Image 1 (cartoon, rainbow, N blue to C red):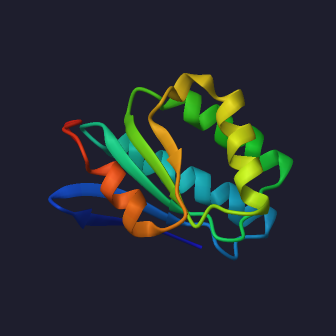
Image 2: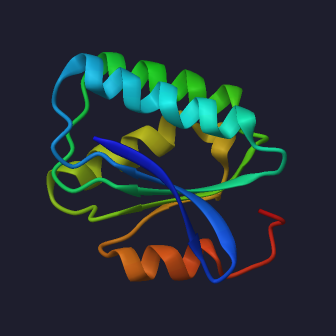
Length: 125
């Protein structure tokens, strides 16, 4: 589990690695850490998430949905990468039930495509 701030093309990005996060408490802590970084930011943030093999618990989905809704005005865009197979359906479902994020969340097969989309326009992040 890791959450860190990275920079790409001059943009500040919160990068979260969900790969290998299977423990319930670790999943909840991941969401809390991201929420804290979003709250501390003085401008809208970009979020990049490595979702390789990640299969969330119901508690994670509920908690992440609440946090996404609570911080919808502070997250400019979210890009999830390594999304394929089983977790692709999960992300489509997550997006369906979190309409508040609009078109600012997208899934990708690889990190480069996710970063390109994330930093493609001026969103003041």
